[in-house]
Amino acid sequence: MAHTVRDKRKLLTRIRRIKGQSEALERALEKEDGDCAAVLQQIAAIRGAVNGLMAEVLEGHLREHLLEEGRTPREREDDLDQVMGVLRSYLK
Image 1 (cartoon, rainbow, N blue to C red):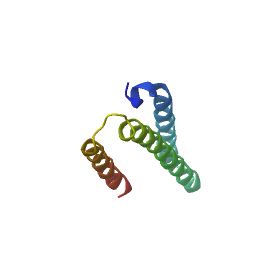
Image 2: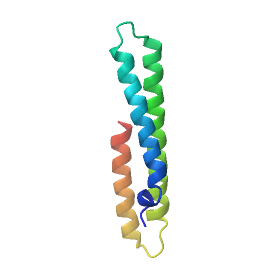
Image 3: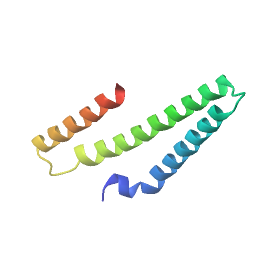
Image 4: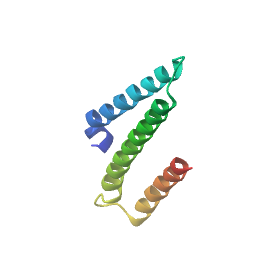
């Protein structure tokens, strides 16, 4: 079973938290007398939540796919290349 399916409840909880934070940011920006510090704090919270989600999914992927028994070195290398491509785009 894929780690994203097995951990679906936990991942969806994180996504819903990010959604709530995003909606709070939108509300803060819609205010006529919006507080810049509150907006910055909300952006930082969203960034932290997304980074946490990425770390959790990445760890599950690495543990499940790279450590999986019976995979050839070529399959492991291909998977690693795929992960590295995602990380490069994420870190831009």
